Length: 194
Image (cartoon, rainbow, N blue to C red; front, side, top):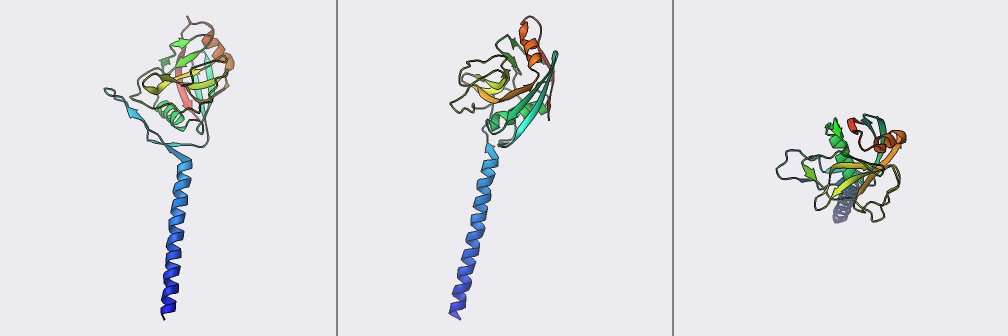
């Protein structure tokens, strides 16, 4: 009789171990699918940050409709999940709609300068390069990333503090038109996700 009790006890312990191991494996898999982002509210501003869990897999297609035509971007979640999550969150809230691009020269197009109400640390690899068509977040010294983003019409040597979030995949001629004449206004009409 005691022998059967031992067998049942061993089987019960083994079953519990398998269940705990399964939970641990699922928890580890969830960590690879999402990143916990630290968005920090800016004192005195009313904007709310996105939820802290950002997806780490997949690409996001973005169409930036401007007063000179459309720019199509492909954002890479695996490279900078918190930055891509923030950008798409602001785009879905229409934060970028009907806003100017205050810096537009032959070397840079910077848009989205505003106060989203939060900031977060840059996501850097240490091996950043900024070729023509790169889409990156502007880093504000002492603050980090907010809402401003740049699209580069030329290969550039930006400070390696700018988080690369993707690249321009269509609309190079539109980008050239937007950056050709700094005296002509450059404006975002709307930003569409998908």
